[in-house]
Amino acid sequence: MTIEREYTEGRITFLSADVEHYSGNKKQITASIPVFYNEKMRLNRDISVLFLSAYLRENKIETMCEPLTGSGVRTLRYLKECPGDFTAKLFDVNPNAIEIARKNIKSLNLETRAQVLKGDAKLLLLTESREKRFDYVDVDPFGTPAPYVNAAIQSLNPDGGLLALTATDMPVLCGAYQKVALRRYGGFSVRAPFVHEVAVRLLEGFAFRVAGLNDCSITPLAVLSTDHYIRTWIKIEADRKKSNRQTENLGIIKFCEGCMQTQIIPQPQKYDNDTFEHAMHNCKGLIRMAGPLWIGDLFKIKQLKGAQEIFNQDDASYYHKRVQRILEEMIEEHSLIEIPFIDLHALCDLHNFTPPKNSDIIQYLKTMGYSATRTHFRPTAIRTNAPVAEVVSAIKNLMKR
Ligand SMILES: C[S@@+](CC[C@H](N)C(=O)[O-])C[C@H]1O[C@@H](n2cnc3c(N)ncnc32)[C@H](O)[C@@H]1O
Ligand SMILES: [Zn+2]
Image (cartoon, rainbow, N blue to C red):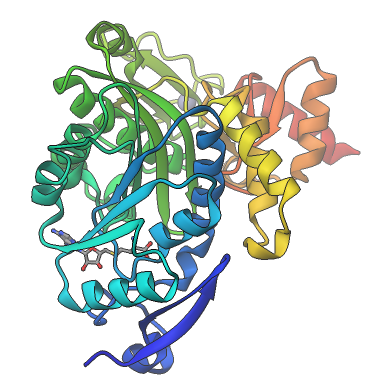
């Protein structure tokens, strides 16, 4: 029998396995605890609640699915905290998870809106959507979501469904295992200071291709990169013509280790190095490539502003303290999302500079006539349309002051 404990998150109190009991003093959450619940993923769920609420302003959800649910906390929060009376199907292979999720549904009086089924996520996504497709599927697995994406897309409403994917296989997405990245996501990552952006774009590129093989297009609504995971919210629609056009959003990103210049090249072009413009004169840096990956948009401003508005009107104590700033940074960086971010600390290390304050360098670049913003991907990074060489000289000038 599972030793249970009560937890409170957002607006719900629910049961899960007692993490302290099963993980000892280390409080290390592993996949081996009888029912998986990770308190550290609360920020992920808080933002997911806000994004779903914002999405519901413009889209109708009648039924949703969380195919890897654990204790059920994520979906139960959606049911209790998001507007509307949509229903949900929750799946898990683990019988302990099924038992606890059912108890939670009962104690929260959600029996008429939530149904829990035991079995393999991929299989149930297909069979349980046969009569009525899902309007929202939230894939939140251990490690990579890749094995579930095809079934998830096939289970979605072809007139428009929301797909959320969490990935925690960061060593793969961040360039430590190139061969695994290529076979799992169809592209190479790169070890670089902006690698989390590459990670998000690899996942987005993979989702695009799986959607494409199902004659669907994708519309990325938002991405989140924080702690040790990434997450993406994508609208999927049956639209093969749009999917054809969107092949233009596949490409590679080149990155020079010597000067930190990046360059985005759409897929059809040749991968020759002659066209790479370095940021430093005579730079002999090694040029690395990431991709093929998604080089298109990552956010819809309406989605972000909607989530921010809902957050501002709500009681902030229900959310993680980082939510407000993350939303602000996403809104800022959206205007420059087509340019990979620059990590100022890495750039300063390269030139032996003392890193300036982000706000100072952003201000300075703006007075030079460039656009520059913070990015939620990293506190030490910025996005700017200034070439890297200009950022370097801006830092130099700031250091003289
Ligand atoms: C990371 S946990 C889910 C956490 C949950 N989404 C949350 O927000 O708390 C992953 C869950 O997937 C379940 N699982 C693993 N493989 C599965 C499969 N093939 N089909 C269904 N569930 C599976 C595990 O038992 C575990 O409960
Ligand atoms: Zn270079």
